[in-house]
Image 1 (cartoon, rainbow, N blue to C red):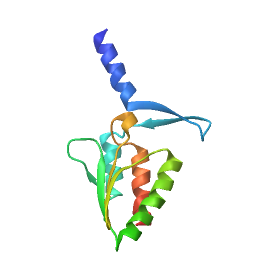
Image 2 (tube, rainbow, N blue to C red):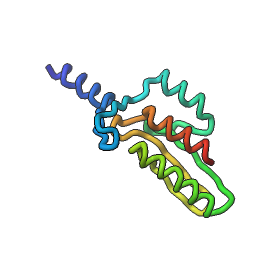
Image 3 (cartoon, rainbow, N blue to C red):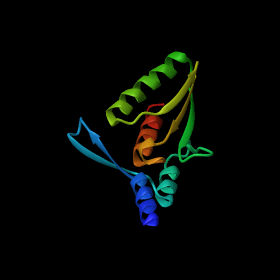
Image 4 (tube, rainbow, N blue to C red):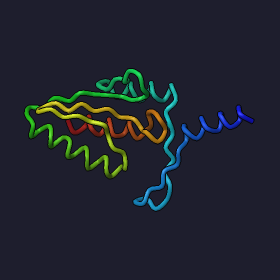
Length: 122
């Protein structure tokens, strides 16, 4: 019985159902498996795996604070639309971003989509 509960607990962490008010239903978010992660990172060459956790990170550098802040504003609007929010840090012209989906305790397609969007606006 304990093994079955542990297996179900792992499955629950990998498959987490979020209720979205905007979509009026539910959105299924799954943790990426090793193959999916490798394929995603191949398309995001500037993003690197984060040591010690299942996440990806990238450092962006801009001309000045105004450009960095404009980038963060555009990214924040997209993140809010996706209901998926990055971990980030800003000092002057630099923005450090880490992406992970806390609901699945790791990397999901949401992280890949947000990373690709950030790449497209930098």
